[in-house]
Length: 199
Image 1 (tube, rainbow, N blue to C red):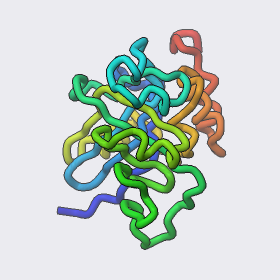
Image 2: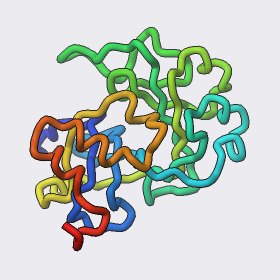
Image 3: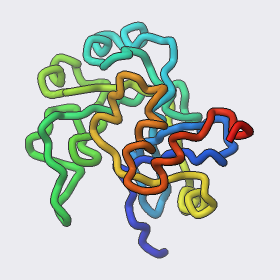
């Protein structure tokens, strides 16, 4: 099987032509991408459920808005924590991005300062280290080659992530904000009307 160039840590930004209502105007952070498939979480789908109502002790660590986010259509009954440890530099080319001897217990680095938080860990062990935390119900998943086909078909823009994307205080504006910061014609896509027939 041919090796797949990893998109782990990048953002998938839904193009205006993406018809799947699960991903309309979505911004997905890829947490894992290899030749076996891809897994990510939708960063801009807040729910009305407070984190503290379902995960005792984690509510105080969740950034504003302190609600659970719908991470995607798969396994909606499971919770996934994504956190940022501030001050962490992007690993240099060729260096491992998944582990660091400085990572606190219960944190597994995914890309740069972004990592997965083990929600079985007592929250107080991570409180001092975490700069931000988001809790997601469910995730988005793709089988081998599926995401690559969707990108080739024009369903997604693939762009660099920034640590602040995980904890955007106004997630409803994240789709436009991510597009607007691109140094290409993608910045113009941010001006698309919510109803494509108005363009």
